[in-house]
Amino acid sequence: MASVHLCGPQVASAAMVKPASADGLRIPASSSRAAPTGRRFRGLVVRAATVVSPKYTSVKPLGDRVLVKTKTTEDKTAGGILLPTTAQSRPQGGEVVAVGEGRSIGSNIVEISVPVGAKVIYSKYAGTELEFNDTNHLIMKEDDIIGILDTDDVKDLKPLSDRILIKVAESEEETAGGLLLTQATKEKPSVGTVVAVGPGPLGDDGSRTPLTITPGSSVLYSKFAGSEFKGSEGEYIVLRVSDVIAVLSS
Image (cartoon, rainbow, N blue to C red; front, top):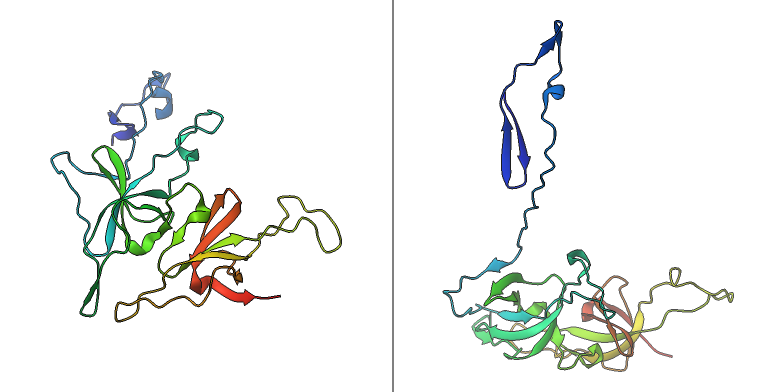
């Protein structure tokens, strides 16, 4: 039977060869292989995004979905060093360019609360990637949008739905016994101060229920909850109100 080797975009098949012999000795098949030619084939590139044909001039999301034009991924560091594709952080921000008709709750239609043109932050792995008009887009549920951000600093984020923005408390620099902690041994805090809150979750009648947690509250939250961001004044986290364990007071 012939042996078949897959090599990049080409397929080389070795036909069945009768092993040669010398002085009656059989030469193993491995010894009859041709020497490598040194040619290399470029690896296949798999594109995750769905490419929309140029013949289509618009994309209209349905239901409670929105179409977001994503920010361009940085391909260089601040010092000008080129980043490989694996080291480039996936953008979590973009601009809303189209919205669906809204969500049906009973007999009511609740319109999308995010307007076209809004600058938004969304969950890290949200949506379906789309390449439209040679630009990267995402189609996602409205609920995948964390908040609206009109500036470049996360402290100005306006959370949506039942999410809250928290400024994370600074890590302790030393133990109770006075030993200095290194960056690697500092325990990640799960305490912080509420900076902003969303309008609340949707009820069965389509109205929103205001959150009971207010800005300025000190809270304890689940250790691995939410999405973390770095701002000009420290670290922040955006999470759902259900991830808040307790309100702290002194």
